[in-house]
Image (cartoon, rainbow, N blue to C red):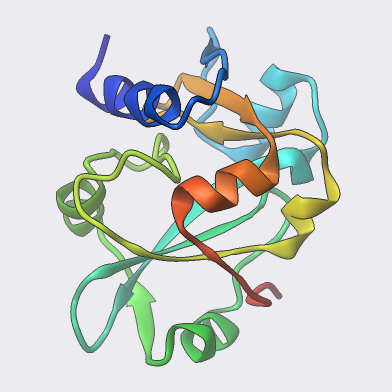
Amino acid sequence: MSKSLKRVRRVLEEAGVSAAVLEMADGARTAVEAASAAGCGIDQIAKSIIFRDQTSGEAVLFVTAGGNLVDTEKASAVAGGALGKADATLIRAQTGFAIGGVSPIGHLSPIRAWYDPRLLDFDLVYAAAGTPRHIFPINPRVLMGLVGAHEADFTA
């Protein structure tokens, strides 16, 4: 089992959340792939979108419904400063995850995070579990709490 997957499982276990991590044979790198594999609607996929804070250089996280796009201007306003594209090196260094498997939980370092209210329309959402092949089902309010995210409007 990968270190990334172990970190995600540990966070879930320590929080008392019984979420069965699912391995998808064909992968779940994108929201479309994950929704297809899980048999759910695309907006039930909790995407982890990482930006780079242009002032601090740190990664910031926006957890959004799979069918939504993050509006950079709105996200920058919510974050309180200009945001830019985060590269794979920054994402790996701060979260410990590779692009395509970034989980909203289990990061190596604390991360500022915001949460798409669209996810709260569902009883169950699916999020990446630290690899491009693993996802886990969870109540969206529980996930928001585990992430430590603030609900905000940042989508296009």
